[in-house]
Image 1 (cartoon, one colour):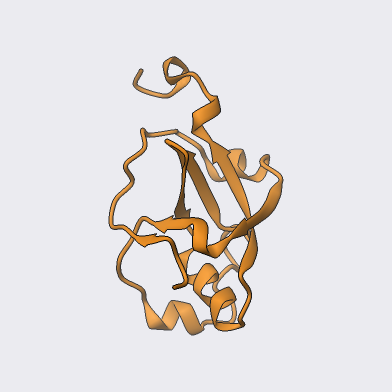
Image 2 (cartoon, helix red, strand yellow):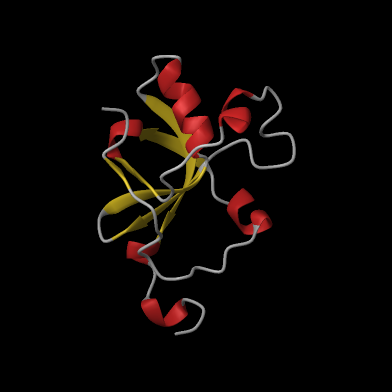
Length: 107
């Protein structure tokens, strides 16, 4: 199994993070088998593209919520890691478990 679970939604509250905000989170190693995806489908063209991160963040975005790790952005990059037989990857992890719910947008 590559991922812990294949999901199709984001069960955590809106966090309001911009791409610049994500850039301020240092990447850390994350095991692929601990991640829950937030999308069920893949675009094969995106998966096979050599320049898929040209306009985006080099590191996938993961949200920790309720003790679980949700792969918010970067499922194609994570799957490429798995295809190269890598069990871990570097990702930016936003830990919503450590943030007061009152500080989240819309609270």
